[in-house]
Amino acid sequence: QVQLVESGGGLVQPGGSLRLSCAASGGAFSAYVMGWYRQAPGKQRELVASITSGGSTDNADFVQGRFTISRDNAKNTVTLQMNSLKPEDTAVYYCNIRRIVGGAQYWGQGTQVTVSS
Image (cartoon, rainbow, N blue to C red; front, side, top):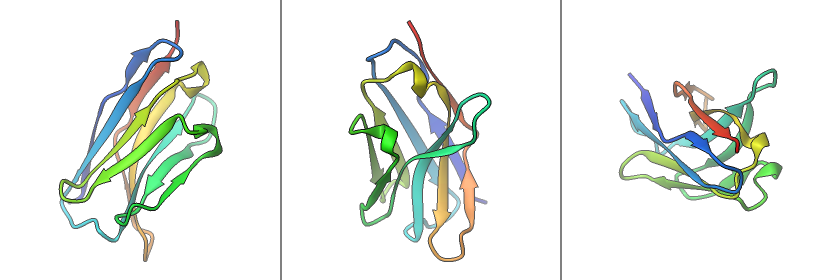
Protein backbone atom coordinates (compact mmCIF):
# COMPACT_ATOMS: atom_id res chain seq x y z
CA GLN A 1 0.00 0.00 0.00
CA VAL A 2 1.36 3.35 -1.02
CA GLN A 3 2.01 5.74 1.83
CA LEU A 4 3.24 9.31 1.84
CA VAL A 5 4.75 10.70 5.02
CA GLU A 6 5.31 14.44 5.19
CA SER A 7 7.54 16.42 7.49
CA GLY A 8 8.36 20.06 7.93
CA GLY A 9 5.98 22.96 8.01
CA GLY A 10 5.18 25.22 10.92
CA LEU A 11 5.10 28.90 11.74
CA VAL A 12 7.55 31.31 10.16
CA GLN A 13 7.82 35.08 9.86
CA PRO A 14 7.44 36.81 6.50
CA GLY A 15 10.67 36.54 4.55
CA GLY A 16 11.62 33.35 6.32
CA SER A 17 12.22 29.85 5.00
CA LEU A 18 10.78 26.40 5.50
CA ARG A 19 11.60 22.99 4.09
CA LEU A 20 8.96 20.35 3.43
CA SER A 21 9.85 16.73 2.83
CA CYS A 22 7.77 13.76 1.74
CA ALA A 23 8.79 10.11 1.75
CA ALA A 24 6.90 7.62 -0.37
CA SER A 25 6.77 3.91 0.36
CA GLY A 26 4.92 0.83 -0.79
CA GLY A 27 5.80 0.89 -4.44
CA ALA A 28 8.16 1.88 -7.21
CA PHE A 29 7.82 5.50 -8.24
CA SER A 30 9.97 6.07 -11.28
CA ALA A 31 6.82 6.38 -13.38
CA TYR A 32 5.27 8.91 -11.03
CA VAL A 33 5.35 12.65 -10.88
CA MET A 34 5.97 13.81 -7.31
CA GLY A 35 4.87 17.20 -6.14
CA TRP A 36 3.30 19.56 -3.68
CA TYR A 37 -0.11 21.17 -3.65
CA ARG A 38 -1.55 23.64 -1.19
CA GLN A 39 -4.97 24.66 0.01
CA ALA A 40 -5.73 27.86 1.86
CA PRO A 41 -8.98 28.32 3.79
CA GLY A 42 -11.87 28.93 1.43
CA LYS A 43 -9.78 28.26 -1.66
CA GLN A 44 -9.29 25.34 -3.99
CA ARG A 45 -6.28 23.10 -3.77
CA GLU A 46 -3.62 24.25 -6.23
CA LEU A 47 -0.36 22.94 -7.58
CA VAL A 48 2.78 24.44 -6.08
CA ALA A 49 5.44 22.44 -7.89
CA SER A 50 6.06 19.00 -9.30
CA ILE A 51 8.99 16.99 -10.57
CA THR A 52 9.46 13.87 -12.66
CA SER A 53 12.01 11.17 -11.99
CA GLY A 54 14.06 12.68 -14.79
CA GLY A 55 14.15 16.04 -13.03
CA SER A 56 11.70 17.99 -15.17
CA THR A 57 9.81 20.48 -13.03
CA ASP A 58 6.55 22.36 -13.23
CA ASN A 59 6.14 25.39 -10.97
CA ALA A 60 3.14 27.58 -10.26
CA ASP A 61 3.50 31.21 -11.27
CA PHE A 62 3.37 32.35 -7.66
CA VAL A 63 6.55 30.40 -6.88
CA GLN A 64 8.48 33.12 -8.76
CA GLY A 65 11.85 31.57 -8.01
CA ARG A 66 11.21 31.48 -4.27
CA PHE A 67 10.57 27.75 -3.99
CA THR A 68 12.72 24.89 -5.20
CA ILE A 69 11.50 21.34 -5.63
CA SER A 70 13.91 18.43 -5.63
CA ARG A 71 13.66 14.68 -5.69
CA ASP A 72 15.79 11.78 -4.55
CA ASN A 73 14.82 8.79 -6.66
CA ALA A 74 16.89 6.35 -4.59
CA LYS A 75 15.09 7.36 -1.39
CA ASN A 76 11.68 8.05 -2.97
CA THR A 77 11.57 11.49 -1.42
CA VAL A 78 10.52 14.89 -2.67
CA THR A 79 11.50 18.12 -0.97
CA LEU A 80 10.19 21.64 -1.28
CA GLN A 81 12.53 24.39 -0.13
CA MET A 82 10.53 27.56 0.42
CA ASN A 83 12.30 30.89 0.77
CA SER A 84 11.08 34.47 0.99
CA LEU A 85 7.77 33.28 2.37
CA LYS A 86 4.80 35.61 2.30
CA PRO A 87 1.62 35.64 4.40
CA GLU A 88 -0.30 34.56 1.32
CA ASP A 89 1.71 31.34 1.30
CA THR A 90 -0.18 30.29 4.43
CA ALA A 91 -1.97 27.03 3.64
CA VAL A 92 -2.02 23.31 4.23
CA TYR A 93 0.58 21.78 1.95
CA TYR A 94 -0.02 18.29 0.56
CA CYS A 95 2.45 15.88 -0.93
CA ASN A 96 1.14 14.20 -4.09
CA ILE A 97 2.36 11.46 -6.36
CA ARG A 98 0.68 10.79 -9.68
CA ARG A 99 1.35 8.01 -12.14
CA ILE A 100 2.13 9.51 -15.54
CA VAL A 101 0.23 6.78 -17.40
CA GLY A 102 -3.16 6.00 -15.96
CA GLY A 103 -3.29 8.89 -13.58
CA ALA A 104 -3.48 6.99 -10.29
CA GLN A 105 -2.51 9.35 -7.52
CA TYR A 106 -1.96 9.44 -3.80
CA TRP A 107 -1.99 12.21 -1.21
CA GLY A 108 -0.19 12.86 2.02
CA GLN A 109 -2.04 13.92 5.13
CA GLY A 110 -1.07 17.57 4.76
CA THR A 111 1.16 19.85 6.79
CA GLN A 112 0.30 23.35 7.94
CA VAL A 113 2.47 26.26 6.85
CA THR A 114 1.71 29.58 8.52
CA VAL A 115 3.52 32.77 7.57
CA SER A 116 2.84 35.49 10.09
CA SER A 117 4.62 38.06 12.19
